[in-house]
Image: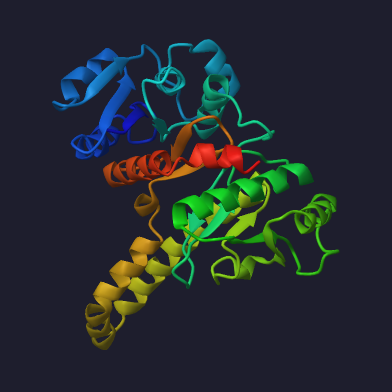
Length: 319
């Protein structure tokens, strides 16, 4: 049975929603929650609690918190993976601290200088668009982007079963000369690689299915992620307001409700659960800070899939 260690105190809705989501997976996986002793009264039978006397808040400096809080729920959970007592780590808490804890406890995959957060975006095709980095590194070199591309392609092939996934470099134009010094240099490196590199792609291509893996620095990637979340929410809000304006619109909305529910699910972060932190020496899932029980459950499923498909080993072999 796959063993999952979860930071019970990570996230805006911790610990209640974290415990609820974990409880739904307890019969399928061996779940270990990590947190203070007072949580023991809230944990259902069949789940284990490893005690940690401290936890890291969302607004704390990752470096300072990790240095001062040696017994934080996040660090204790990461050490469980390091010591072979868990197969994967999940946290919906401070993402910078999660990356730091993973690096301190699990180290980097040989050949990787910086890990990256990989986020799948829905597209008009059946295949998602995997964007990395989505926030781990605000500044990157061309070598970093090349490493992200290799990791993304290997992850996509392992998880989504796509042979030689199409890799694109996010830029402000399709021409090789477009972009800043980093993207121009990265374009040259990607052309020389053995990846299925299709060249530069622009923002409007992200949801069109042209590329299956898209690389960019974490500054740009995180803005894309937050913009996509906000845009999806705004569209549905506007749609609801428009429907209220006439009875005919309400009737049409009723008929289209199943399709709209399906569409909403494709843009719901809770459906995707967590984002893998690629490049560290173990399976680490970073969940959305606002994760509810459903998001945690789906994050557990995503982590288990990474363990089953030996993603970390495949990333090591792909460098």
